[in-house]
Length: 409
Ligand code: ADP
Image (cartoon, rainbow, N blue to C red):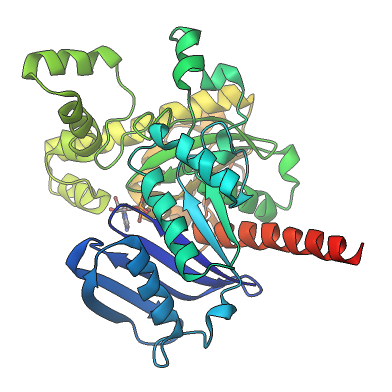
């Protein structure tokens, strides 16, 4: 099946056109600066030259029209007819408590998505716009929603409830939701396949470390706890987000600095984390460079970052009652030798021992722990788009067989 995978943000749309039979992206690209006269579409067809188009793309509907047009383009395209797009899979950020798995998008699902807007006011509206825009241009093509939160929705109440009055959970749905679910699910499943064991027998900690960072405790293939919470702000230190802290700190800063709610929100989400502590950069490569040059604040930022991950490895090993595998993924998890090294240092007491040479020479999916390490430590590149394409294929195939059965009967 050929699936168009879309990740619609407020001013950008990332896309991949995936052939699920070979599990390869026939084309990938991005539309940026939607809403502006100088919007940019970058398109990379497989084994062909990358192209860049600048034009007026004022809304998501026009952006999707451009994406379809470039997929159809005689020179840079990969299909000859729109009908070759068998289905569309959308990354949807927040499924609230409603969705614990991927779904075919129907009017009922659209209503539920709209009901969840309050939980993700920045992310769900562009996701919804993307779905509506796709419907404008591909009215008969099935569309599916794959949620960042779904993998975590079934964690136990002890992990998702906050220590606030229970009525507030009931009234406003304030609980831990967790995000990056597609990635945590993918890398934990890959880990089981690489280890050659049924996932039902494994206790795994996954660390997705990119611009946004989160970890998950995966027991028998199910997420039982995760570091991000009601919003992606909780948990690990990230490029620009604070992660965990005493909630009164923000009340104190608001009072002292006279910040509004929106300014406080910006402070915690955009000016904290690595950039906030270092004052240098939110990019781990630049932090590492600055550490190498002896920059003290960059070193603080780096240490706070890795120490927080280490603490959660300990906490989640306790939560899981043991540990079989620790997985690093995301831009930092896949590429930073220093981060993996620091997180795993002095962890022999937990059964974690990495091999320096393996850690330095990673390639593709690989094990970086020593032969005698009780816990297998792995680097597994994430592939959220592939999960979206495969989930979409499965849902659409099921629908087709139901329709077929109905027509036969
Ligand atoms: P996003 O979360 O936006 O998808 P990525 O997963 O691509 O982002 O991760 C981006 C992060 O990965 C940045 O902090 C970047 O510095 C870091 N990164 C990429 N390559 C390396 C590297 N070789 N060493 C250290 N960090 C790296």
